[in-house]
Image (cartoon, rainbow, N blue to C red; front, top):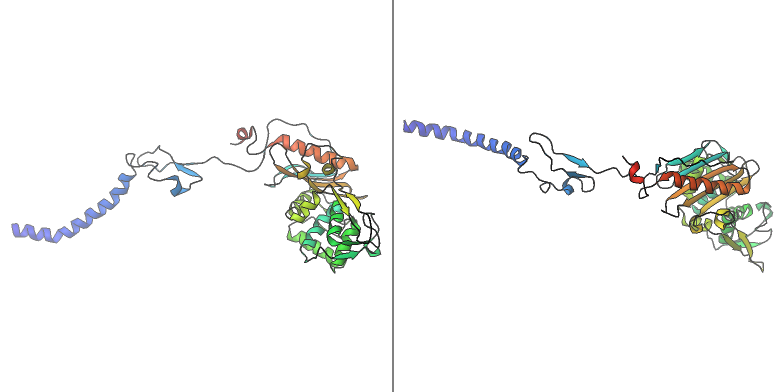
Length: 348
């Protein structure tokens, strides 16, 4: 019998070893995942997702690993439960939008086409900055530049940098046209570039017929007007210029400087507000067909949150600033941003 036993052992031993090896391979992970072996330290949060998950200590045999995801942290403002009294508005179209998230906080006819007037200069300014302009170069004001304002006068010579400030701070149509002419562009080609840039930026409602905004055919929605300002403020040169309360134009062939006030009365303080003037950046516009337009970036002095406000078609010059101020204050009171008191109570 012994030889037979030896023969059987030799014959079946390899199979036995293979079977036992398979058993160990399968059984080891099962024992590893039992309550006695698994702990949070075995699988650190870093191994899964350091910023979003952690493994709970509560496990059940035969169940899956319990993964708890961190609470949602939205960046968008949330509407407070208390209702703030609404603001009376004479403007035909209005939009208030959170700068960071793009969330609309208030709207009134924000998809209605309105004449933009001199808000058009924001698009013209961006097109100019696409060109290789020597801002230290000079040009003389000519009759072809028009006679719509007295900020720069026929025959006066200025640097293009000086004209840039007059065009944006004082909204001088002649100054803008002189820069375009000095850049070797005719108005038709320049306007074509403005329309192409509107398409490029996704401002579908905006159409331009002239660079200054004198044409009532320069149109756009309030919702695209806030987007236009946001795009323009990406350019440091535009931001810094629109934040100037005043500019002194200096004709190179004249003896005296000429004071040019900003057309933005919130910035100059002629319309009172609690907003920091160092952070007020906007553009005005007016022609008879548009009534009084204003688009502006404002920051909450308490938490630094930034919003964009477009007010198109207010009934008076003063009303556009007052209505932009009042609707901005309403938005900051009606909405809470992350970090504000009460914000966590609004988050599920």
